[in-house]
Length: 214
Ligand code: ATP
Ligand code: MG
Image (cartoon, rainbow, N blue to C red; front, side, top):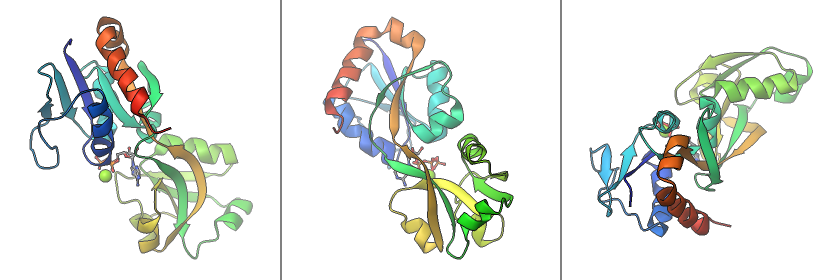
């Protein structure tokens, strides 16, 4: 095998990718949750996993620091996806991008009345496009995490965030009111790497395709 570097984030993406890697015959020799290593060796001397922030994965692949990456559609939309080949929806880390509001906030009538909404989110591009599409005027407030807090302390009226079970919303007296899109993680490939390492990358791609949940 040619040298291959795969970028991914720890947590749910690593956990959901491990079975796909296994199907491709690749096993990490360290657990990113317990190891402090940022470059993990695998059972193949020439295959390395680099563990980075979820939102940094497209950047590593774009610049060729990693040949392949696994990133959520949420992250790819914010990044823009320039120069990245995205051949495969891995159907892992599935959730929904949603608009959520405090339980006592009447979103429908706020929208109907043409109110200007303050929206707190990590996903500026996605949120901007969504509300522009609805003709709703918004002030976007960029946050890096814990969006659920924003309406509770009067920072925003509304949040745009990822929701899976909805239990975090519920615990913070929020309710989902609008689905923006379904989210899952994609395989992304550096275009130069695809040309130079075609055989190895194709082998991984085929194994992943075969192993994806139908
Ligand atoms: P960081 O913690 O580094 O700031 P993050 O919070 O985006 O980044 P994770 O929470 O590990 O990182 O999420 C990584 C990816 O997993 C997201 O980009 C998204 O695609 C997906 N994801 C996020 N939340 C959920 C969820 N509740 N259910 C399923 N998948 C999710
Ligand atoms: Mg997180």
